[in-house]
Length: 410
Ligand SMILES: [Zn+2]
Image (cartoon, rainbow, N blue to C red; front, side, top):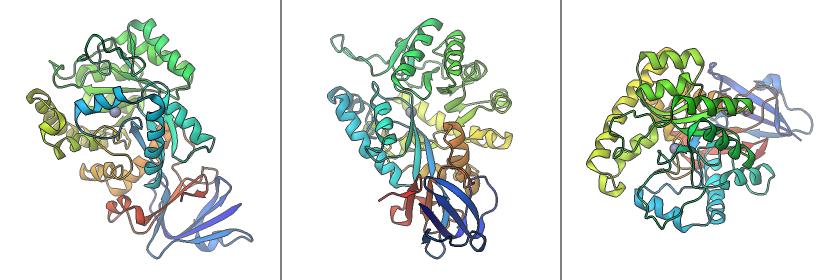
């Protein structure tokens, strides 16, 4: 089936100036041609969609840091207890609703950054088979932590036995085995936690949790399978060591310096600043989150550092991505767009923020979309407005018409 979408403005996701009076020709699930409306024409038999006056056609966005297994409620204790009380089937069923609400907001792809068991791996497969509707999902399964590390936190009674919430590994051999287990389960990439970001336990900010040998072994294993490794990081030497030992994407990465930024540029490391989750902390009181004075101090310091890191990364030419941490303090769907707004607040142009969420994010995901170019998957958004002059239009569901693989999402 052929489809032509015509719009007053076309943003192709590459950062090129927008095309006025443009159109995209789609055949089945892929883009066949992009150009001026007059050049694309209206081929016989094609369905014609004329976007409303003043509308923008752009690639579907991606959010490369979400947790579909989690509800987004803010309190640490409640966050833990909901996991204790839910079966994995219940988690997956609820996640399918979150996946749909994310897709509906123009995010046609997400990267799930850790979930209990294989819940989101299974959801990704169900969406892939068309059994339920959601964005394209790349999932890591369980994140890998050292025993007692960032995602294997203490604080539970001895009689509380947790299995499969995270995967504790120790030593290079343990991490290799951990990576292999997630890959066997169906993971698309590997997530590690190389530094701790719990303000109560951190002692020294930027404390490293995995040894360099453990980081290197995990990266070697994943790369052997053709997969990327993402690392939860904080900053300083632990971040530097994470990067130079081969990680492909760094998450959060609050505290940096010239040496760290230089390595990211040299190695092409993707940087996912997750600005929204940092800002979101300050939309609640410490009490609402269950924060202690120590963790609150840490949150303030990391928030301040993050804006400096973002500016330095932009100036140096680091590959900046768009990821929110939705699921942790952030509901799925209505707020994802705010990460683009925060990138703009932090000094990116609106076009650069859109490139981060489209082309760069899809490069990170290894999904053949995110650019309006012939041959790419037809994951598209019609925006009734101009996100270049007002990025907040991306947060208005009534202004968005979403296509995934050439099919409109209803
Ligand atoms: Zn996260």
